[in-house]
Length: 138
Image (cartoon, rainbow, N blue to C red; front, side, top):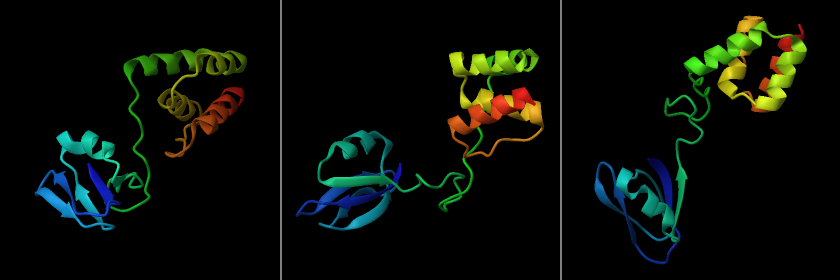
């Protein structure tokens, strides 16, 4: 896990990295390191380290902040649900959405099938629900 790690203790602290073994971090220092997979949970438990995933805002994994989050895959079950939604009336679709709360992948696939346009990759669930109901009513 690539992370920005700050040593908040008054002394030198070590962190096990995936590539370079034990790396020392001075008191008050912040470093970007790749934490070894088998050390991530322990590192988070240490009260003297502040750990923030450095790629948390790198949605498209290009090393830069921003970009679009990858679209979730549509499973076979989701495809069947979308097919049933496409056959329903606007009222049936709205009721289904309210009662069953289908996942974002289902809502995205339904919107695309119904309108021919993809929903914004970073659209929130509430927006997807609204767009799906609007598409059903159109």
